[in-house]
Length: 97
Image (cartoon, rainbow, N blue to C red; front, side, top):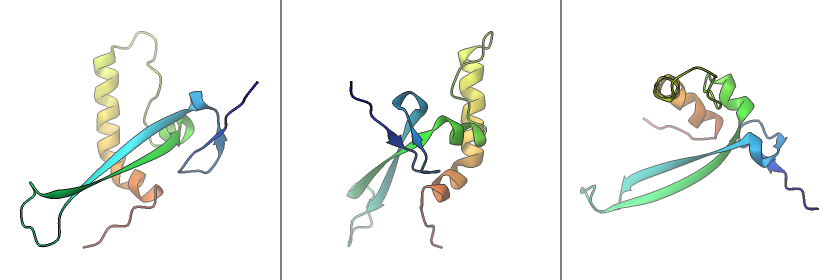
């Protein structure tokens, strides 16, 4: 029997595959010497976040019984929009002005 353990990129705790969510951040920046966003460099960063860290930021990971999926998704979207900067900072993103 093989057991895989995953590490949350926010809290660094070991979790099982079922307790882990993957977040992909896509960074689009213009290439050097180009003012056009059509010629842009795309960087993809994939991070793994455990369900505990998500619920700490008011993101629900399981649909409560009796709640509509549309309402569930809308509440999660609002929570994510409110907490996106905190998420990125927790993942080590540095912002420059």
